[in-house]
Structure formats: C-alpha cells, structure tokens
Length: 433
Ligand SMILES: [Zn+2]
Image (cartoon, rainbow, N blue to C red):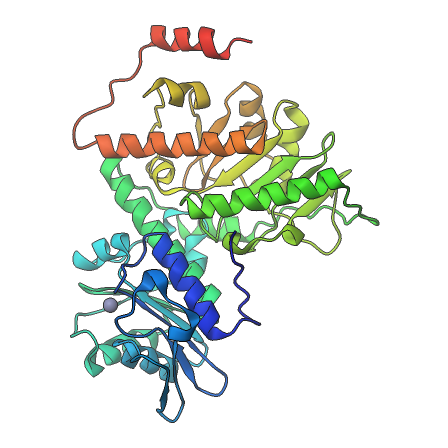
C-alpha cells in the first residue's frame, strides 16, 4: 500500500522519512549517502541524521536544529547540514532541500557536465535552469559557500562537481519532483547516447507545449459513483502506484485511463504527483462532460478519440520510462522483433514526431485502429493500449524490458531480429482469432 505525501499537513519528520524511503527504493541513494531537510516557519530545520541506515529510517531518527542552534534528537545532524543552512539563509523561497548521489546525475557530475533538460517535454519547467558547484571538501563551510553561491543566482537545482546533486523546492514534494525528473533526464540521455544521438527540443517547442491547453470539457451537473465506477478508480490508482514503484512512471508525467460504459471513461488528473494519487483524484468523463471541480489530464481529448474510434481498447497508459524514452529521444527505431513475447505483445511500434498536444492530430487514434497496440511519441512519451488495464500494464513492462535489452545489448553487438517468416508464424499461431 502506498503512503500518501501530504506536505501541508504532515509533520516534517514524517515527510522526510517517506521521501528518503521513496528515493532509496527507486535506487536514487545508497544507505549512507544523501540527506534531506525541511525548514519551519520559525526557522527550525528538520534534517536527516548522520550515518543512519537510509533503508530503515524512522521519523524518530529525524533531527531538529533549532533557529538558535540547539540540536534536538538522538543522533547528530547530517554532516552536510552546513550547506542546507547556507541555502535557507540565502533563499527564503526554498523550504525543502534534497541532496543525494543518484547514479545518472553522478555520471554527469564526474565528467563535469550538466544534463540538458530540453530532452523531454515537461522537464525544463519542472527543473528550471541547472547550476554547477565546483568541488570542495564534503561537510566543509567552503562547500556550503559554493553551493549557496549557485543558489543565490536563482537556481533550484545544481550539479556538484565529483559529488552529486542538490535540489530545493517550495516544499518537499516540489523538491522531490525536481530531483526525480532531473535524474530521469540524466538516465534518458545516458541510455539514449548508448544507442544513438539524443535530439533536444527547442525552447519554442516546449513553450508551445506548455502554453497549449486543450479546451476543457464542460462540467456535468450531477455526478454518480456506481460500484463499477468506483472499482475502476481503485484499479487506476493501483496501477499508477505500481508503475511508480517499478520505475515505469515518474511523478511529473503520465496518464492512465479506463473505459467505463460506452465511450465514458475514468482518467487521472493533470499536475497531480503520480506517487500520491488517490481514488478521489480520478476524474469521471461522461457524455463529453467532466466531473465538476476536477481537472482531468491534458491528454483527455486523445483518450476520448481513442475510445471512440477503437471499441476493442478499454485501457490506455501514456508514460515515460527510461529505456523506452532512450528510443523516444534519439528517434531510433525500437525493433521489438527481439524475442517472441515482445513481438506478440507489441507488434511493430510506430514512432510519431513531437507535438501530440496539437488537438487536430488524429494520427494516434488512426494508427491504433490499424492494430498497433503501442506508439512512441518522440521526446514525449510511450502510449500503450489494451483491453484490461493489467494487460496494458504488462504490455508496458514488456516494452520497457525489450528497450532495456536492446540498450544493454549495444556494447556486445547489433540486434539480429527474428525474421519475417518467424514473425508470420508467430502471427498465425498467437494473433489470428
Ligand atoms: Zn553528498
């Protein structure tokens, strides 16, 4: 069962414990590395302790460094506390800080580079411009000065030379989303460079994407929640949480929907952190109207067109996962003629250029109507469809595994695909009804 992060109401020690375990679970920190802090209105700073196992941290392990310097807690505060304090002093808009050594961002840090966030649609806005702090001794005042110096330029995220990364936010959720998205960009670029040449979006393309708000459906007057509707809400939440746990979705991107009755469906909301999605957040779409007071995903129109034109499709997942995105950002062909399972589940996966937010584009519903269950959208996402939601999720997993095998195979050789005859044999045995 996923715990829900509620930054306005949860105690900072509970927030910090939850986020550190999320970061640890997703492989973005080691047991000893990384630290998190949150500052209170009165200037007290809650921070992770020094040298305590990040895999089993409890709220009672979190330290409070009072504004007057007194330390309350049963451990010593993190050895990197000086730079947390230095950032809070220089940036009153920053109320939470995450520092860690996640592998992909460390790769950038050790070659003295900054990842270009124009690699995927939403990252430039989530991460903002990225700063760079030169090397200093860990835990030193000088390191604090270097880092605070970068934050004083207005950055909310920096790469630390030969060390790691520091990210700030107006609350811990904001900082976590920036952290997760930046590490995701780094991974996508690294995997992309293994198989090809990453193509970056122009600022104008991203601005256009962000500015483009497809017309909102009107609100329905009355809303009912029959049991079969509630069942689907729970199913969607479960799949979204599972996708986050499995590294198939990040908090800042991803839409899941399920057909309900006829062309009516349930869909995830816009700009809601995916890790923390709850059944009450899911939006009902009925008779071309939306549930009152809720903002459905910006891709609602696309889901609607897909359901209308494809009676066999009953669930849709639109997401970013790192190995599939390596193909999406390099505009490389994802050839799933790798193993029988991959081809049977996915058949050939077409790729479309960036810009599905343009409402007039009916390309996707039409491609799906031709029988392609999955589509890659360049620098944006992978779209997977199916009957039952679990089947669609399984397809997504198979797609990500196939992409991963292709990326991992690159250093040992080129794919020798299953040949056309073998594909036709698979088609006649497994796909003909
Ligand atoms: Zn560190």
